[in-house]
Length: 608
Ligand SMILES: [Zn+2]
Image (cartoon, rainbow, N blue to C red; front, top):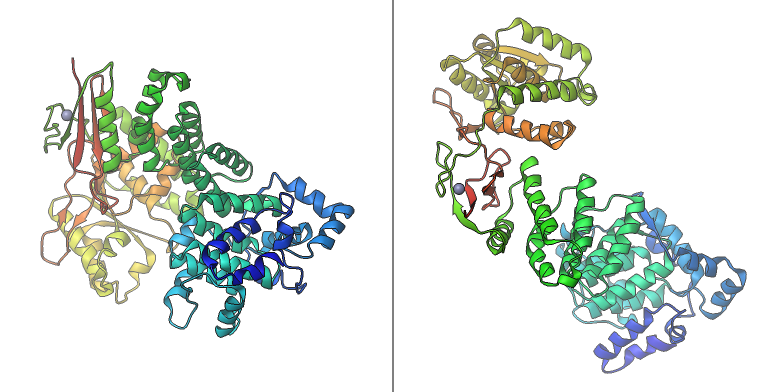
């Protein structure tokens, strides 16, 4: 009866650890395992613990599947297993049945979910009267008592494991829970193992992660994204990091890995000085249209020097890697991304450490006239050239205004009606996203007043104003005062779309149609539309146009008082370079709003 009465050993802690480790060996690998599996099992308990919501989570096929199937379907081996290890966690039949059930029913445990507290974990841990984690490992009998004291709740094992994760419990406690479940039920569900895996991963218990890996590989036909990600993360930080690449390759066959998955393996490759693999994976990540995490850039800028130190490993030449790193800076430029403080530090160190080029690096800011306060060079203007403007306008009209996605949110008739409306009016100086501006006041009863105040300010400046609104704004209500709305229509041109219509295409059309001088008022960033634009160059133009044309109201809008808008700088806040300089704006704050740009720069100048 092996493991189970050995729990009563007085020196439970250490002995216990050993036992569970052994218990996780698949039976094919050790004869010891037969002692570790209970033979006295109620046949119908295996499925009870997997009886909840389905998510349709995609899973990757298990490469050891064949092995499992062989033992599961071959009548001889099946019989053998059933005779020797009836319904134990390691019995092939059990594994297959469980796997079948799990595939249909297991909710995913993603890293994100666990970070947010887990589906049960946080709630059970924080609500009084709910499950509480024991402070030490318990023998099965005590677990049973504990479970009964909670009234034998459903999915006790899963919820308790979540509680252990949420309360950062010792691994031994989790192991004792697994043993209890193995005694009581005779099998460990995929879902339970997944949570246990999460606990092992977050605690850095790599050996246990390997154990779970072996079990899951041997017992379940496929792994979900949650387990795959945890394995990739864990393996990446060990000597078995190359297996993380294999898992990633398998993940790729079924779904797109996350930037984090790539980041983990890239970090491992850099750490093990395999520059070729690191950059191959990085290129692949970019080709898939994923956005790399800042940590990945951090590691690439850090690691390259170590790689260069080991010439025999440097399949990739120094200059090749040099070009690749500059490519990261260009990627930031094209996607309007600002490196965080840690990454910009790495970039600075990297430039300073170059042997064949001498660079001077300084922290800097930019004067209102657009000059770098360190080197005095002039930064790129925020203004688009006539050619750039035309190119952007053509692309937006073709890909956003006429593109497929617009018609999900508006009708061709309405858009045509709007185009005719715009053509009949003189070119606008400013286009206001009416709903967006009104919504900046959280007080519903002040919404039309806020919009009126902003419109009045722009009218006072002698500007030709267009207000885009929705038809419901014309129906008098607490938010939309009849008198205010009437004044707005006297001071500005107004166009009211159907209530379900999306404002952005109208705003883009009217602003671009009016010419390069026309600006718009909105806090929105129109991220979705930028994604519709093909190619980095067009997207970069769009960002630039947006930075130079978006007016954002600053502070509280009060009737009768002047409205202040955030000033639009004359220079472009974007990574930029010349033959002998780089200027890199970076994030030194966590709470920058999406419409704000960084104020801090890294100035890099090449010594002659
Ligand atoms: Zn400079």
